[in-house]
Image 1 (cartoon, rainbow over the protein chains, first blue to last red):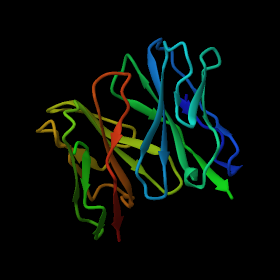
Image 2 (image 1 turned 135 degrees about the vertical axis):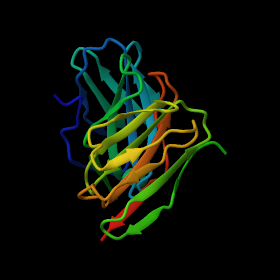
Image 3 (image 1 turned 90 degrees about the vertical axis):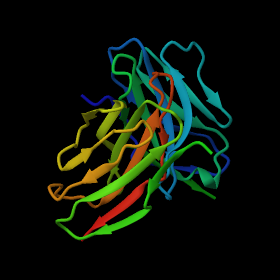
Image 4 (image 1 turned 60 degrees about the vertical axis):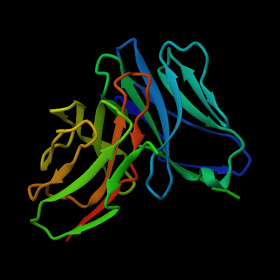
Length: 115
Length: 113
């Protein structure tokens, strides 16, 4: 079974609008971390936001927020007030407490911001 | 400045040759990783290392080899046994704690003809 599933290969959003990128995960470990990365066309991977499995509040970092629904095992990324520079690939990832050092990545979502 | 360096950014090789990709970090991280990324695809784990002199195979280790003789360095050798070596290779490191993210290098784009 896939550890991380991203079902949206491509998404479009109008500039200044909000967009939600979906991510579901699969683990039986009670301790885990969820991460979102942005990959522009240059190829670098940029860390955006982190959510721990025991965190009570949804994580926020500037225009990024993570909609964490533990019972549904979903960790959707919300980008508010989209900018042209947000056009990139976005990857969801998970790290389990028991394996510690191995990360599992989804297949990514390509976001295009339309002026 | 702390970070991860990968060199070179672009690498060209003839088929049948082994090639080694460099990855160095000065973040004092215990864990290091190598990923392969093909166009329009996600990241696939090749190898990872949790401590010096120890490493584990990832999902696509065949045709690749690594070493971890120093904490700072985790070179990846793409051998002639790797059938489709042309790809973008990303190195990453992380502290050995679940709450910490991976820090990535800028990547090496390998082309084998």
